Amino acid sequence: MTSQLAGTGTLLRFALRRDRLLIPVWVAVNALMVLSMPNTLKTLYGTPAQRADLLHQMATNTSLRAMVGPVFDDSLGALTAWRVGVYAAALAAVTSLLVVVRHTRDEEESGRQELISSGMVGRRAPLTASLLTAAVANAALGVVTIAGLAGQGAAGALAFGLGVAGAGMVFATLAAIVAQLTESARLARGLTAAGLGTAFVLRTAGDSATNDGSSVLTWLSPLGWLENLRAFAAERWWVLLLFAAAVLVQAAVAYELAGRRDIGMSFLPTRPGPAAGRLGTAGALAWRLQRGSVLGWSIGFFLAGVVYGGMTDGAARLVGDNAKAREIFQRMGGQSGLTDAFLAAMVGVLGLVAALYVVSSVLRLSGEETSGRAEPVLAAAVGRLRWVSGHLLISFGGSALIMLLAGLGFAVGYGKQIGPVIGACLLQVAAVWVIGGIAVLLFGVLPQGAMAAWGVAGAVLLIGWIGPALNAPRPVLDLSPFAHLPKLPGGGMEWGPVSLLLALAAVLVATGLAGVRRRDLAS
Image: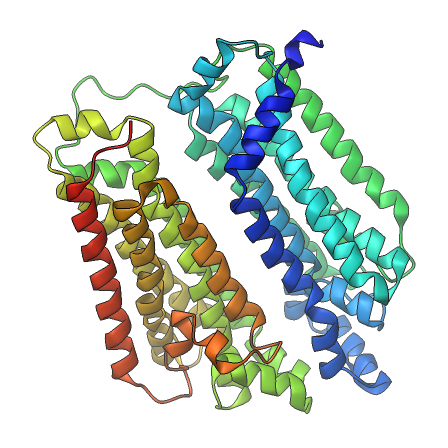
């Protein structure tokens, strides 16, 4: 067994060096989201009467309970675990699956793993190193979270930190299994993300049915385990055994699969294509490569719109006369009525998430280039700009499509102000395209640093999500392109800022394309 783990330490150091930006950024975003919440909740629900009313509202408001889960206690620590626990666990899961797939299936798909394995590297060393890298990321998040929440109660902070880290490792080991089953890193990420989506849906359905987390559907979801851990509310320490058991079983399955296949192979081989090719253009190839991603994001945004639309009236009742909660929603959604402000805030949140889509889609170009698949395409009668433009059409057009579908989802879930809400969703596209333009600029001018686009998207997400709750200074909020959009519905339309954002996106894309024309391809 020792020989099969030879070289694990070296590969771990190499993986941590490669992820020296990705891991700290996402850990910082997650930790800041969690640690900023106690002060925000203290401002919102500072009196026992306000907290008692919150618990009553959540016990009877099924739509909001489905979104964030039930409340088990009225302490600041328990309210923090209720408000951000599900999202902290989901973000840890996303980080973990990206890390594991990057250092396993991505390496095999690019051919680098075959070169590494020609040295003194054990068969299971790459898998072990990738899981240890994910463990380092989750441990860092857990330690920071525990230290930051210790003032709310040491036992609760320990339970919450371990629960979030445990959820991350559950999906890290799930990604390790999927990476053995598929030949494509893209498919491995998609299938693991689908598993995370399934967990979220199960928890949502379970929490909408009961107000104490006792539903069978909730217990089938690792995200439901975190809420049933009941951090800061008479902790159920035995629930941690569920995380440990899932991690150990899934890791054992991944190790068994890794020992039964050759490098580059999989248990679910890629289906062979037709004997005669049917792709006549670079754009058609780009669509063939990215259509699964576009479909997945489209379904997700439509369903998110339905959920947010359905909870709009319930959110207005929950806020009620709470002036501080009303103020935060208005900072996020504009100085309009509470319902309009809530709708504008939720539309803005979906716009922030759409920025992640456009970055992932644009960086598909980088993956095609570094894997060597772009070279045979460009060796034919296909120019660089045609090749890049085919992918960018999917990236920028796809972001507009998913925001349109989000607006249609709001129309289904809310059933009022259909035109204004759809218009508000499409308005977010201007800011999304600026983030996409930055990704194109980095790919064209600084291809080695193209992954920094994830850091930009993460920073914008952090500013837009947490900044209003922390009452961040205006200059900080203005760093995000989303801060310059009119707050619709409810606010007045201003074409000037929107036109400037679109012009900025065009300049960024044009500069990136010019860089692509002048530089050499990665080898």
